Image 1 (cartoon, rainbow, N blue to C red):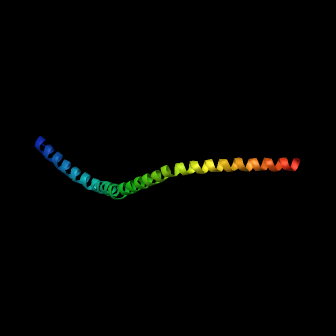
Image 2: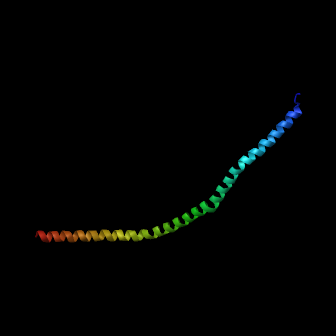
Image 3: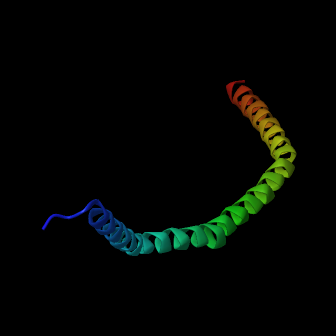
Length: 97
């Protein structure tokens, strides 16, 4: 008994349906994992990035405010070094005279 074209077409359609449903069943866990990853990115990672950005901005502003103070302290430090060098040289001169 030979199969007709209609029989072959019906078999082909059954196989397509069966393969399609099996493929969908195998892909569903992957889809679920992707959905979970997207939710994690949205709820956790994005929030953490936002918190980091806000903290960075706060730190940057504090640093900008501290720059002039640091420059003043550096100038004071250099001045104190000069004074110390002066008095050390004066002391050395007195010892040598």
